[in-house]
Image 1 (tube, rainbow, N blue to C red):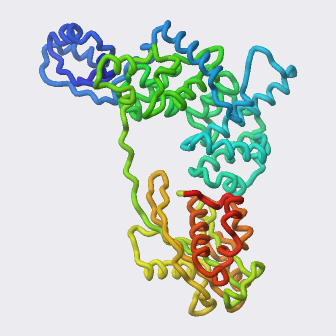
Image 2: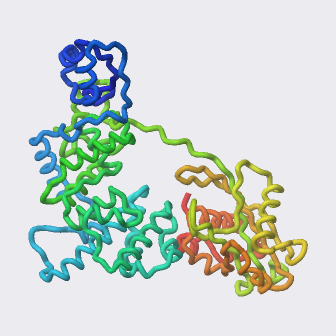
Length: 509
């Protein structure tokens, strides 16, 4: 059978043992650090003590009482030490400025107090969603801009998905923004107050266990735990847990450990202190153990001091990430010109073609230039053939019939990494002149399945574009700087580097 052992120099590990008639007496004698086994295994031993053979039990079935491992004394010490440290060292972050709470209340009226709680909850919600997979320093500016535009849940509920996506552009993982909007609309449409418990918060689209715990504890003082990557690392080191932190049973037990530690009088502050410790001191590669307020309770640190082969950073176990798949994409910046020559172009008679991605899947509902995704690398002629097919099928743009090519150039290529995809993107500039004028392009629009629009260069620069689309724009600019400006498309001529930086389209290398 499989049991979970605590080894002084290696932490918790699963090991397979062979039960026999005297196995339990012998095993408990030689392994005093055994702390859990399955009731099924105990019953098997009692009823089948003379049975031979190996009983194999899946690791997923092992349920260890890890939450009982913190002694009452350690629990109180950890709470007190972390809260004292947090009060002195917490970072000044905008979403925390509305969550400070103490024994005295500035707001006396009950209705005003509830309104303040809802405002805090909304701010915590927005910040926690933004902070998923994103660095704090990046989030600060986005959070401030978001709260200026939509200061309350009611304001957000009135926004459109396009507005929200534009505000979110550059943060990535755009499904988060859509869930925020859907959740706000659901709460406001229901006419109820902001959900104030974990159980009710879990009913809101996009709110999982972690976000629900953060909102409930920080804004409404519900005594519930939170477990994110920082908390997992802190708990794994405090208890020297070497099990896979992604394993379902391990995750479940880490939540139990976190629940045991939550301070009942200051649950929100304690949860934030635990996350703050992981973010600032108990970091993945270079933990500052000498400055850690709970180093005396840290089993990983104790092990590292007593065994040279053990390091604090051995905990938690390093999980091998899934390998990213590679694919390729060809993007065509299509400019529809009212003139038949680049030298005659003006900003007023030139428009750029943008298309909206499907409402499901990667980058759902966002705007981009026409593109084709490839399973394998293709040469320039094949890429152009595929783009021409797309333009003909979706927009009735046929260079043999209703439009002529003024300019067509390959302007660059780059690699853009999504969470699970490494994509090589080829960028092409295509300037077209419609023989019948731009109104011909709109004749068949209602019959198309693809949503698209034509915008001038100023409107394009004001849009909230993904970082990949901004890179496409930037490659167009770099190409223009290398060539004769008089022979470049308007997207290049009208958007110098300084203007692109001002509008957030420029990406520093």
